[in-house]
Length: 266
Image 1 (tube, rainbow, N blue to C red):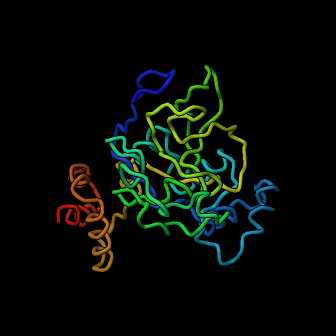
Image 2: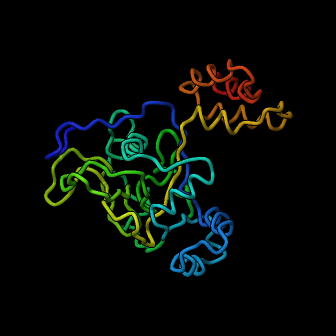
């Protein structure tokens, strides 16, 4: 797409990517935080101490970008690059919204709802992408690994972007090629890596081949596990077949690939 002052910019994913369906939750973050022992910033510790017991499914927030990166590494994943995030959010067609081409009301936790806080991840079924990725618009904004192309970016800029807006922001297109006065074409905000806010969280991604080869068990799944792998493969669908066939042929490949492939082929 063409961005004002930036020329033509291409968003691409060069290899199959696994993407968290949901933003990282408070419950998941607290498990990670407890594993760090005393190596937790006092301000983050004070903030998470205020989370109520019934908000475990809300998206975690208030971590810096390096803290978000450390969480992702701990689960064998990483933060998405901005180009990857926008392609996940808007698809190869570059649609303006995660769910499609037109604006919809009450399909994302943005300022218009007036909640003033996050809600449980996955609450807005109508706002998910066709690939079943939720809350790409609203709820909490999401750290990424680098800086999205913007008009005010200068050479040597060490900031990174938070993407997709939050419950503090009005709803808008994630990608809008129309040049609107005072507004970037991309729903992105450039911040210092050390910034904290109650409406900035994270979502993890992983290179699919590497993650699956490292994560899948080498023992043959029992019947219940096999059904779960087939259901997961079915959810990924036909686009995953080529990669799964390639990985299943590798020497010593996990038997789980057979069930993932069977599901993707249904």
